[in-house]
Length: 282
Ligand SMILES: Nc1ncnc2c1ncn2[C@@H]1O[C@H](COP(=O)(O)OP(=O)(O)O)[C@@H](O)[C@H]1O
Ligand SMILES: [Mg+2]
Image (cartoon, rainbow, N blue to C red):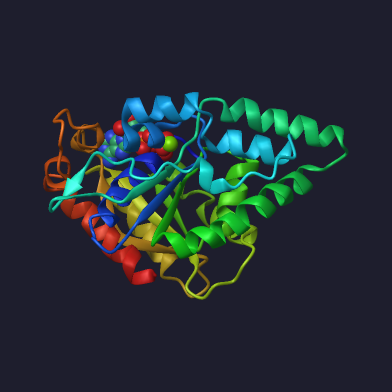
């Protein structure tokens, strides 16, 4: 629901870290119109090329939902987008990019379908009906599929949540974020279509500073996550508020950057810790 909590930073850091394992592949699906994850993972050149060639998720959904074109999702995925290498191999990251047109497209699709007397629920259902089989295909092709969601309510975000096994809720440990967290987690879990064992929502504490206020709210959330009827878990990994996070996540200028250059400690350790926890859930 919230912006500025570190969703996109988490997608980039986690995606690139998971892909350092030579036997693992990562697909990032960007459903945020700001397309920051697409831009950061692929770099300006590839990102512009994808938008120009209409190989983006909004173009795909428009063709399927409005044009009635039965196109395959695979054509919209750009393989090998990462410039980063680790131990002499490029990170195996693929991208289903977003574009700034997604906002327009989503509105257009909704307008088009409501004119045909479809309710919002039916539109979400149609979107899920298209994304769900695609995700089943991705499950076989990639070790990890990560969605970067937009803040607020969106049919595409709802669809992403409904097909996911693990929902990461980046949360700044302050009063406002803590308020309503359980209700939010409960509403998210209701969206899910399936009931895979181990699938759940997990809070990731982000942007934590050294104040007493943040410590208190972190402890509060931890207590609730550990409660008997809790609807969410919590990662042990904490992303601190620090200028080195945005600095590290900015593309490295070097023509052949390595993962280790980009994720110098302590950032590398933090994301490795998170990746380890994710692998543990899987
Ligand atoms: N741990 C952090 N410490 C300091 N700045 C951060 C941190 N995480 C994210 N930021 C900065 O905050 C802004 C929002 O982060 P972002 O990951 O884009 O959040 P979201 O996707 O939830 O909107 C960006 O400018 C980002 O660089
Ligand atoms: Mg974002």
